Length: 320
Image (cartoon, rainbow, N blue to C red; front, side):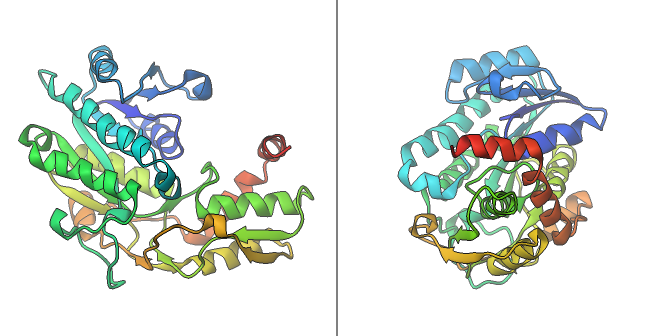
């Protein structure tokens, strides 16, 4: 199996590359800027997925049997102010990649990663893989992911070699600010180091999300590369909801610091889904996958990552 991982320098992709390296897979990554990926120990191809010709060239050069497509604009909040760029990368970029794959004599199997944000408002019970007509995206990011699914559904040639996911929130060591646990853990690490006052600024704490460790999530992706049914869509999530407030309280406890929590209006989204919980029975039946890393372990690992000396120094420089 020769796997091309797009966006190989991203948070999820780095974990995926690491996992694939432990198997017999031959792994090649694509990155937008190779200067940001010098620590990645697999061959790299420079690729801007919004460039159709570049997509075709990379597919010719790599000749993958499988593609894990992780190159994307994945920040929901950022998408509200940058809707056109979000669509350009997520929709047009994915279209370019799929067209390049379809042009191959033997198209590779492609896992196209979508989001639970596609579901939109719901009754709070675990969601099965609803049909496209039932999806109610509330953000430009979610809309871009639904549009990708519509594109695949409308093109039999794309359905013939793709497996889609709707992935529920995932977190872990290495995630950058812009996501809740990374934002909180980075602040707590800086407070513990004496780099900032003991004030924790947060967004909406009342929502419930289905969180899974990123290392479990990429294990699901690698299983889908081999066992996913082509043309199908799979939820990837734990099936259990947790209140964001509970994550906050546990991170503060683990950090061992006294802080004052303040709401930050800038962290609020224009729209918010009260609860998102997934039913991953279809994924489990197809692959045998189940999450194995406890939530408490993930939170400890996230905090430990932000407390490393090199990370603290980088954060000091970023905010100096």
